[in-house]
Figure 1 (spheres, helix red, strand yellow):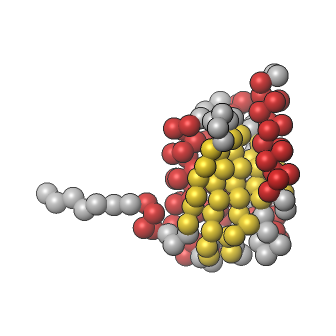
Figure 2: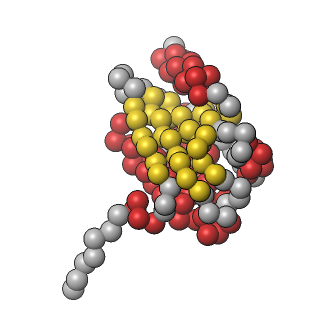
Length: 147
């Protein structure tokens, strides 16, 4: 039996950069490129989601920021797994209720807001400013530690 090497990064042309702050409490994922339209973008959504999940479980941050300022996105529902991340991966009620912090651009704001209307559970906050999103990430940490 022959096995072929595989790499999730090869299923999508999107570039995903992940970083974590010094304390390991905030994970940031920056996504760049063109999210393919409709079902053609399923692999794009799966790739983003898989990378975010793997890094989240390795580093176990308190807060996650999803930076989509350089993502061209108009439609495709697999991105909901990313936009509603904590509700998707939550192992308990507390984790499912964590706030997803999403940074958008003027080019993808309408599409992101429209797709989020499909979410019935989960909590997401949208920002057009990265620094404000980071401030919210810090607030999430303070809230978590003071609970």
